[in-house]
Image (tube, rainbow, N blue to C red; front, side):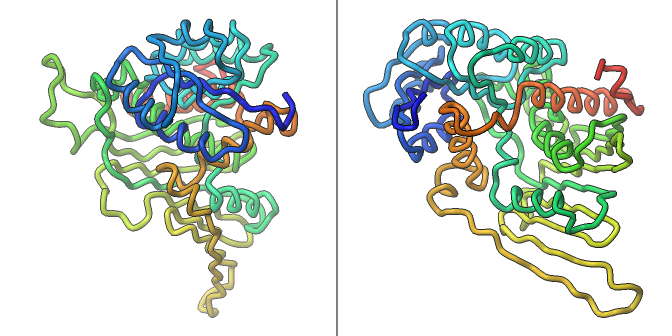
Amino acid sequence: MKSSETIRWGIVGSGMMAIEHIANIGLTENAVVTALADPVASSLDRAAAAVGGDVARFADAAALAASGLCDAVVVASPNFTHVDVLPPLMDARLHVLCEKPLATTIDDARAVAVAAAGYERVFWTAMEYRFMPPVAEFVRQVHDGRTGKLQMLSIREHRFPFLVKVGDWNRFSANTGGTMVEKCCHFFDMMRLIVGAEPVRVFCSGAMDVNHQDERYDGQKPDIIDNSFTTVDFANGVRAMLDLCMFADGAEQQEEIVAVGSEARLDVLIPAGDIVHSPRVGFMNPKNTSRAHVETPAAALKAGQHHGSTFFQHQAFAAAVRGGGPVIVSADDGLRAVAMGVAAETSAREHRVVEMSELGL
């Protein structure tokens, strides 16, 4: 596709994340939303209002795919639907931006990754955290050696509980894959990116201790983890840790990523957008810490809840569609993030270390 041609976008699933994608497509040059698909009419109404113009509506992905109205599609439907939604879109040879997690089980994620491996169009797993400007700069500095030889990586997300979704599908692990898949696949993807190696083993201690205790849906109590500590050993000797709390609404920083190497520690803080460099100075010597702010454009910040990342992801995706850039997050990346999440869920449930070899990875 030529750079001057308009990418016609379809959106499958029209909830909150779809609205964020619509806003960011609106900020992308030569891109327009032409079609929406969702079985829930009220959700379609909200998404159509966000588009702000004439847009075709369909009850399912297959009808959207058959319409011929789209060149590319965002899959933002509930996690458990991805494995069934994707085949008709790929049969129609559309470029695909599939929201995380790629699927809710390793078998389903592997099936998608196998299909995508030979796909002649762009297939991209949406991992927004990679594209936050402060995080992207943090990763660049780690890879450039600013910490020395990386040995330890920690990621903290202290945030608000899961929001309400249509049909309350996100209250149950059978629909989401579990919190460690649904929410934390982002962070497991970041671990692999930063560390530059594959995980060997995972240990997770987690439970649902505070949120959703009084909620019942058809008599069933939710079963999703709301707090956890997860440690991951990587093949190159780096160890990583994820600290998740979903009842820490008042935290000053929602995300903090810390890399510690042989020569220094490096932190990135979100939403502050600051990177803090703390070199080793020896016992009792004066600190030599420096702090730099990474600016994120106001329009990108306003267009979503992921610190401007969705905007930059769309720019990179459009470049790939037009042959001017690589696929940055593949279906295989999506599969491996799901597998780490499944390992963490299994570890928390069975109170044991899970070897990634058990999962065929």
